Image (cartoon, rainbow, N blue to C red):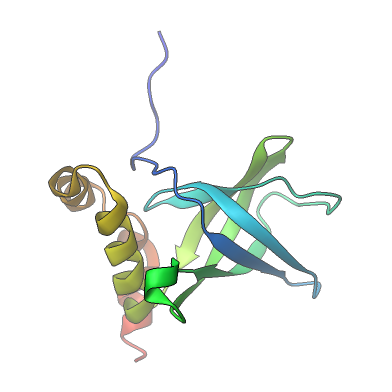
Length: 135
């Protein structure tokens, strides 16, 4: 029997994302799924990835929120033929509020998602509070 290790439910959202690597390379992708802990994006094409590498990300919100983007930093967890796994590391409070709205608005059971966040806050627990003090 396999046990689920994920703390956050994944939503199958398809959004545009820009990945900016420390070596200057930029890759435009689409998300395959997203949670409060991280996201999976489409395959890396011919670009080599390094587990643990810090990547700056820009997530473009759906058309009804035109012009709104979410900036955050993430770490690569894996890359294979099915996609790239990225774990969220830092996000400021404004970006977190946009991200939270995105997740709640697209979840089939918003109350369940909020209960999940109460139990396992994800990025908020790691870096959100520290970064919001700098605002």
